[in-house]
Figure (cartoon, rainbow, N blue to C red):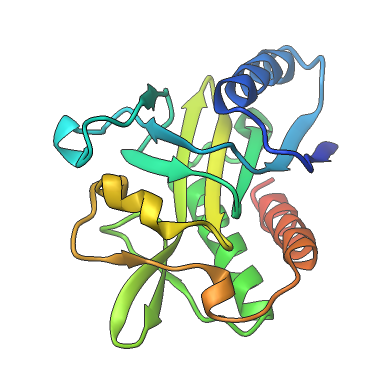
Length: 208
């Protein structure tokens, strides 16, 4: 199966990106266009998934964009790797848990290739790092599956300003911090993205 890969160099406005994903969803559903992997950064934005709570907003002055992805509230901005996709599970195993596991393994194995150990948590979705005796989140996952087509994706903190997360309770999880790849190791961002795409496609092929 052909998967188109796009990498945007300039930040993409969140609402514009979602419109493009929705359009591609329809095209993939009708078999008019191939599946998609789209790597980008967003301009600063707070987004809320379908299970967010108003109590997760600490600074009530911030503007929130409600979206149809799963999950709660998060921040996107410069220095964060956004990995969007539109993947047709009708052509693969229709197993949501297995698909999320593919996302988790793609991130964990990619970080490991650069000497960073991370893990998933069944209770708290996302990818986590044990750093200086504390648990910190390095990647957030938020997807939507409609008519067995999976879209939206995940975000990895590369060098994002973590202070922006202080205005919310990220993903509704208290008492756990956040961390950037850049705080752990000097890693070439473009090399990491290539490895991430490679691993995602590799694990995805096992779902066929």
